[in-house]
Length: 466
Image (cartoon, rainbow, N blue to C red; front, side, top):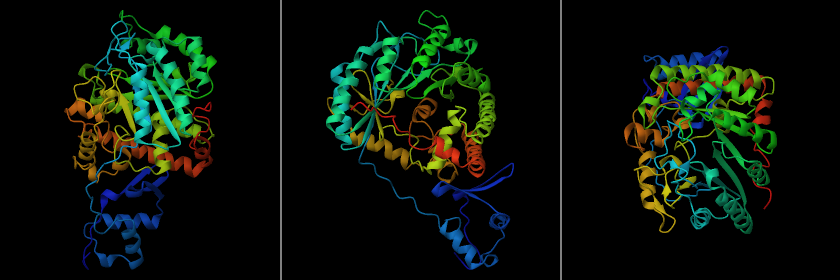
């Protein structure tokens, strides 16, 4: 810095004001600080473009430089990716489904009659390759996906038994999870899932009128009554782990609180998570810009309810905010939007390694298969391109370490380039994460024990039978 001027690194901090909360978010460390009157004045002076270095004391300058709020911005060196220590494996055990949800993104989806089903040999080879790529870890996860995974329940039973024995021999634990539309659940299946402590997520879009708009059977009729009946049976028999509902919000559907109330208070799901459709293959199902704004306003209204519950030591099941608070609480600094290709591997029913389950069957291409192995050079090239890309304003955005550019698949559908950041709702995401920072501070200041109750590592989540 010269004697008369200095560089303010505005991309490294963010002032968040709401109600009585006055916060400084330090972007490089994902840390949140309260700002007193003295420090607020200091930051306001920083924002004055006519300020000079002589306007600040040596002590003030030292602290600001330590936080890299002033001074030379740290140069971003090229990041190489050579290792892929994935511990999560997504097995797309079937391409067939007994529903025909109008917004489904699965490119290889077909009916149960024409389903491509994964073989036992493919599944076990994938598990062996998962371990070979990340040996000697304590916990591994195997996720069953589809189509509708329960249409290939015979394979799920075989693979689960194999995985228990396989990982036991490696002195490791294995955790099983599954996403299902619930329609094929039986008491026998539920007892099996209980025995191996599966984590279960149910795809359901809300009350009957909303759910039946898009979640149709192959015959074109609504599936709500069947799904509700099966969900009620599941929740009455299974209390070993929390069971969550996953809601897809499509055009015309913005009733956040109504959907949450039905799924959480009436059907009694433990968690309810919402996925706004903004980049569907079929544009007619994408939320309009106005609807997307309305959805996130609904998120913030639900967020206030979450805060009020948290102040009473209660969790209200709104998982969108819960997961964001988990990232803030852990001080996570994301360089990539998710673990696809690095922390997790996805295998299609015929054995191809896909970037994630969303790309299975798409024309994007794969990264090798179980016979030839993971194509590490190709995967390295892809991940490095995303890691080192200077896309839009991401490098100077204050949520860059909590967003990391957004979902690969959304970018692929929207821009035909999964390495490109999802730029079409950046302002909305910034506003939502600012709300999360406010929510975290308010709960932390008024009831810090909430984080000890609901954000500690959950014990018993991994299969205890091994």
